[in-house]
Image (cartoon, rainbow, N blue to C red; front, side, top):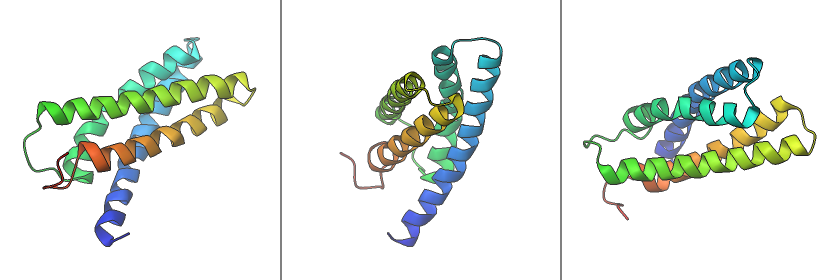
Length: 131
């Protein structure tokens, strides 16, 4: 792993931490208001997506070109995959009897891994690596 990849990973982690904070605050706020946890997951995950796109595009992956439809569609697809994975994992971990916090944290880590790999390799590609 070269220095550029490490810097990118650190930036992604920083943006991810901010998004995770938003996600957790919204999630636990909604569940404290007796919103079912799966509905709360849908809204809380969505709360961080727009912020994620802006920060990851401009700061983490430093894309200089104007955003285009294909990039946005790829971003949405990766986020839908990550959201789906977190939704399913959260459901099964809750059914397995884990605490809501442990379930949410585990699902979040899985979603972050999917997001980083998808964003790095497919959404915000290095110039000249378009698929």
